[in-house]
Length: 520
Image 1 (spheres, rainbow, N blue to C red):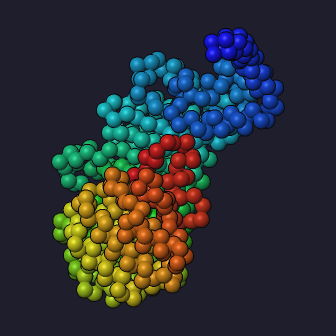
Image 2: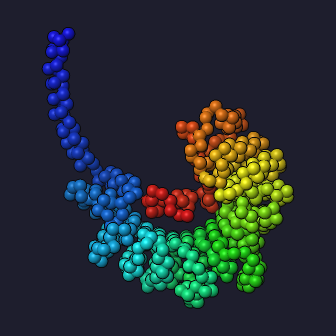
Image 3: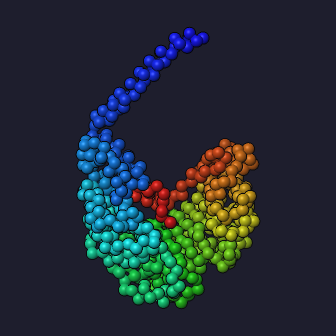
C-alpha cells in the first residue's frame, strides 16, 4: 500500500503544479477576451451593471459608472462617450458631503450633466432628516439640470421650507414630465388659521406651474397647502397629494385629462359650511378618470365621491378609512360609503372593474343588498388595515360574502391581512372564510390571492387550507397568485393600477433605479 501511494504521489504533485500554472493563464485569457469585446457589446454590459447599481450615487466614487471608467483606458473612453450611463442621478447631498467645498459637490453633478448630453435626465434628490439643508445648493443643482430634467424626485425630510424654494425657482423646465416632492409633517400645535409661518401666504405660481409637459405629480407635504401652490391642473394625468381643507379641492373642476387620482384627506369631518362654500357648483366631470384612490375620514370620502362625475372609471381603492369607532366604521357609515360607491358606479359610462375596500365595510345588515349594485366588479381586494379590528366580525363578514349573491362575477379575489391587525391564530380563521368565498364562485373565479404580513406564520402542505387551495387550482382551474416557500405563503399578486403599463411603484423604481420603493 505504501508503494502505491508513493507511486501516485509524484503524479498528484505534477497535476497540482500544472493547475497552479494554468490559473493565471486562464485569468489572462479571460481579461484579454473581455478587452476584445465589441464596443456595442461592452456598452450593453455597462448599462446592465449601472442599472443594477442600487447604492451608488453621483457624489460617491463607488458609483458603478465611475468604477467602470477607472478600469482601463478603453473602458474609460467607452463610459465617457455613452450618455445613457450618466442620465440617472441619485444625489444624497447631506449625508457625508455637507462639509465639502461647494465645487466638490457641484462638479460631479455637472460632470453627469455634461456626459449624459443630449439625453433627458432623471434626478432623485435625498436630504437626510435632522440636517439643515443649504437651499442655494439645491436650487443651483435643479437650475443646472433644468434644460433636460425629465423626472424629479425630492425627499426633503423635515425641510418643508425647501418646497417653497423649489416652487420659486427662476428657470424653465421644458422636458419635465413627473414631479414627486415629499416632506415630513410635524404637528406644531397650530391650527391652519393660527400657523404663523404658513398662514396668509400668497399663491405660488412657480416654475412647475408652467412646465408644458408635466403630467405626473405627487405632493406629500402636509403643511404645504392649496392655494399656496399652483400646478398645471388641466394637463395632469396622474396626481397623488394630501388635502388639508375643503377649499384645496377647488382644482377638481380643472382635471379634464386626469386618469389616476389619489387623495389623502387629512382634515376633520363636520365642515358642512366649508363644503357649501366650495365654489365647484354641483358635480365635477372628470372625463378620463380611470383610477381613484381616497383615504381619510369616511364622511370626507363620501362627500368627495358624491361630487365626482366620472365617465370611464375602472378602479376604486378606498382601503384606508377612519370612522367613528376605534375598529373602523359603524353600520350607518359603511352603508353611506357603499351607497356613494354604487352611485359613483352608476354615474360612470363604464362598468367598475376593480374595487378595494376594508372588510368591516360589509358588516352592516344592508351591505350585501347595496353591494348587488356592484355586480360588474371583476377584481375584488378585501383589506384588513385596522390595528385593532374586530377579528370575529371580519370572519363573519367573509362568511356572509360566501353565502350571498354579491360579487358573483368576480374573476380575481384578493385578501390582504396587514401585520398586527389579527392575533397569531386568527389568520387561519380568516383564510378559511376567505376560501369559502372562492369556493362559492368557482364558475367565474380565475385568480385567487392573499397576503399575510405575519411572515412567521407557516402553513404545512398537509393542512386543510393548503388542500382547499390545491383543490381550487386543480379541479376548478383557479390560478393561485403566489407560492409556498419553506411552508410560508409568498404572494405574487401585483395589484393593477389605472393602466396596462407598469404600476406606479414599478415606474418609480425603474425611473430612479431604486432598491426599495419609497413612495408611500
